[in-house]
Length: 302
Image (cartoon, rainbow, N blue to C red; front, side):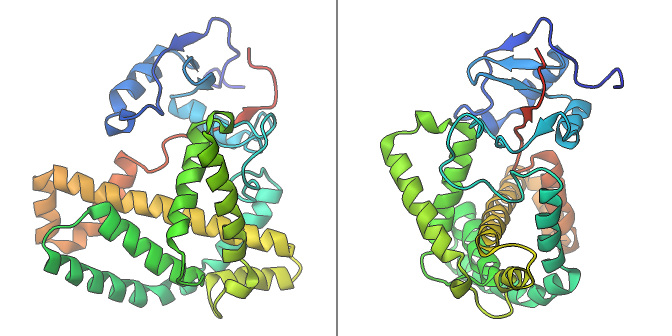
């Protein structure tokens, strides 16, 4: 290993900072800087996990599958020790070579040609939504635009039925919660809700629910071709829906927030709409929706 690789731990640096605490995400960067400079590996005492905050170590953690695995989960819940509330993702919680197979199916389905076919209906819906919001004069940027837009156009593209789509947001909230709070610490009402939503989503993502020519239907074409089983196809649709909506809603919402908080930058975009894409991509660089990714070590690090 190179000298800057993740080291074995001798004297751990302990912090009381909790990146999952209420309000932390409003301005996490000073704490990130502090922890990045403090030590290569940090013991997050309030969470009971180790944290890496330096770029080269995070990259190693994500790419060295011989030492670190996603199959124990990507959040606080350790799937090797605690029963998950829903079947693990076939893409986000599987290592290669299995991950390579399932990701290749989704990548093939989301070909440039398939995405271009969605451009006009996405644009038409965005224009119509903006006109409706302008008439209202005031609106909630996340609830009324980011969330409403993504749930409409993305799930149209997946091909799922229009009824009960709001449950996707509930499911995403539970997924996010399971990554930041151990299931054993959930109140009973949350566990009961999770069981019901997981059961609903299985039906929502079934072959019978997919509209012809949709991304979801294309996943079931892969099932018919023998690439994955029927259950795996259902779970791939689930992953497609959850991952595609959660981060997109957050990214659009964050972009609106930063433009509202920085009027000079909003003026630039307003005067030159060709810079909208650059503003969106800058938000992804500055404050991405997903700021942590868990791994389980395959070998002793202490």
